[in-house]
Length: 169
Image 1 (tube, rainbow, N blue to C red):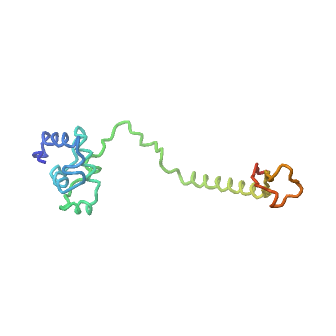
Image 2: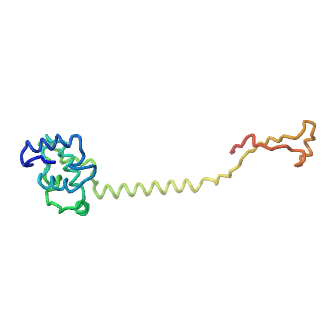
């Protein structure tokens, strides 16, 4: 697929339109054609070309070994993360670190409190008496005949035995 000189916006626009319905330059997997266009592009595209940006970041995410397996030399280009750093704004809250670490004193204090609570929990746990498990089982014994003596329950007089209820006490 020929897009022209990929240093011009017209060629990049043509590539963007092509990548709207295609994941790769040629076929359904990355290939030498992708590496060639990647090298010709040279740098991450502008945000106004979202399809090219998506494709560029995807191709850049592969390792050099994977790219060599596609059958070509690996082009040395700037990675997308290094090429387009986000501009700093005036209202950045640098003093607020929502996910950062706390001071060492606070960490030591938190560790001490945690250890105290664990010791209290283990003390309470050791004072509890061990639970003795008991169960209640109700059996439904069915004799062969309705005139069978219930006191004489041997295997010749019993048709079947079912568990009617099983409860933990």
